[in-house]
Amino acid sequence: MRLPEEEPEDFEVFLLWLYTQSLEHTESPNVNQQYEVLFKLYFLADRLQVRGLRNAIVDTIIALEHSGDFVPGTDLVNLTFERTARSSPLRRLMVDMHVWDVRPSFIAEHEAEFCREFLLELALASMRLLCADGANNRMRAPHAHPRRYLELPDEPTKG
Image (cartoon, rainbow, N blue to C red; front, side):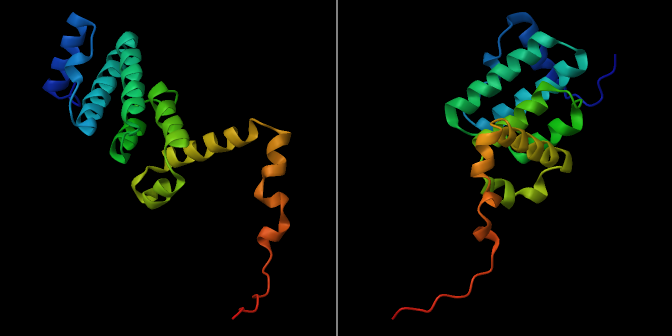
């Protein structure tokens, strides 16, 4: 089997996991570097169809995010959407992390850096979240208050 997209270092980490069933050797003081190692390892595990490793990586990514409240960057999100299938649990995790743990202003500021497919999934996940509460959300919907959309005359300045 040829693995042209994989780096020898990634395969070395994969072999370490095979022998130890542990991801401790992926730890790094730099969160970005640790995410990068984990994502590359996930892509390799996905390609080799090693479910146990994929699950261990997802657990580690979630624990890493919870420990520092730092989500993977746009480059790793885009790489995930480039290198995984539409049904990938890692894709769903990236969308959920960004729905729940990232400020909307960050998404707006970095919109051009995200791939279109991720932004679409992000919008759909946000809409599903809003629709999950059904009737209760209807009253909270901004358009339930029409004044919000009216152009009102300027109020006189007090002075």
